[in-house]
Amino acid sequence: MPHFTKPAEGSWTEHYPELGTEPVSYADSVSPAFYELEREAIFGRTWLNVGRLEQLPRAGSYFTKELDSAGTSVVVVRGMDGEVRAFHNICRHRGNKLVWSDFPSEETSGACRQFTCKYHGWRYSLEGELNFVQQEQEFFNLDKADYPLASVQCDVWEGFIFVNLDASNTTPLREYMGELGKGLEGYPFQEMTQVHKYRAEIGANWKLFIDAFTEFYHAPVLHAKQAVSSESAKVQEHGYEALAYGIDGPHAMVSSWGGMSPPKDLSMVKPIERVLRSGLFGPWDAPDIGLDELPPGLNPASHKAWGLDSFLFFPNFMLLVWKPNWVLTYHYWPTSYNTHIFEGACYFVPPKTARERLAQELAVVTFKEYALQDGNTLEATQTMLESRTPVKAFPLNDQEILLRHLHHTARSYVSKYEQQAASAPARA
Amino acid sequence: MSTTSAPSGTLPTEFSDLEPFAGFALRSERERYAKRIASSMAELQEFYDAAFPRLEAAMAYLDQFALDALADDAQHLLWLFCALVTVSFPVEVWRQPRVPDSGAASFDAVFEPAI
View 1 (spheres, each protein chain N blue to C red):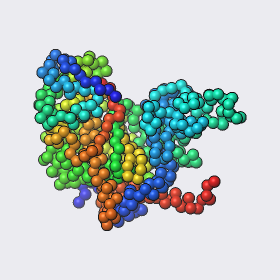
View 2 (view 1 turned 180 degrees about the horizontal axis):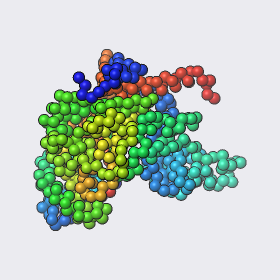
View 3 (view 1 turned 30 degrees about the horizontal axis):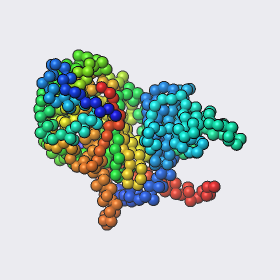
View 4 (view 1 turned 30 degrees about the vertical axis):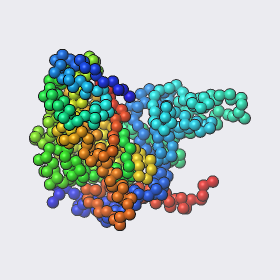
């Protein structure tokens, strides 16, 4: 008997019949060939979130983003006109990486008036025009207007900056974000400027980590020791059920209860949480964010026990909005079929007091402790999926609907791409 | 990245009882976590037992000042209590400095707000 109402079909999964209910193959997570297709079909063609507007506070502010999965590095910059633009991070002269510091493969950020290539000193405006060539007279009929930086489609949704590497893309970002994106518009993300960012190299396919974070079925078991033991036993007995799931095109969300901020019974939580009034679900005393009511996309079940909503904007941008007015983002940047870089960032309203700062510290560190357990478990999954064991299909339950959807979506993008490639005339 | 640690004798006089643990007053979460991993459970327990009962008093003391204008000694006190947060996991839950089942996994702070 479910604790929370399910759709009329009897399950969330059957509410979306295209997903099926049969066991799922993870062949899409262990194949170098499939990953190469994903790079073209997914990372080379969809809107990818690479940062937030706060990272570009004034004209000349820039940051670079390594996009191995899309086969490039981009530099994102606020121009003299205030516009945010993105360019392939390559000098038009002989292909040197244009913006980097110390280590060419590492991301960097800063502020400048123009971009100067370290190699031969070619200079570009913040709008991408080539405006200085060293010893220009030595070249042959070189017209600088013919060699601007190669631009990349760039757009902003609710302060989140996205790029799309497909020059022929015609889907505007707002349209791509769909109904789930629309339902979040107006949430005051811009108030949450106190940011903690973490990064890890994970030895698993990018989709496997998204899998771990789009189901909470694992939480009462894998993270059992993080709660006090009586509470842990209770949670494990009940298991986990979400309040609601939502799917729109390639994107998906799960809405969850979250009775921990603050908990009904203080003996449920650890001593440090009792004193700091904070924990996994964030500081219990929510700051004012000037919101009379939530945007319609949050707490879609209108449940009084609502604690957080977790959105996956395909392919790799996860956005968690927590009831006590803070936000967590995850990004999964593939570097090969069985490795990726995982980024996690906590966004809070800037603390006014040391008490608030410590409460945020506890929320951040708790997130880190959980992520360390999750990350390591994934390597255990990847290794066995790659092994020659005869186990090839895996049953997914109704609380794992978003995994089913993610793998279904990735396979659909790849097969659509393959069909297009097969029917299109060979490119010159 | 910063490697500054607090020399001893830098906490507010009201908290001089915590001077023996001033080595935990580290500026960044990355350093605090490294300190935790490099410590024995006995050391973490000793720090926790001394600092935890002082947490409420430390917050009351620090809340007299604007967070962005803390004097050096108050800043060190806040770092020290950030370290209490870091060590609360091994002491209250794990019974070991590392996160169980985390193997060689690492998850590093690459950006954090200055205190």
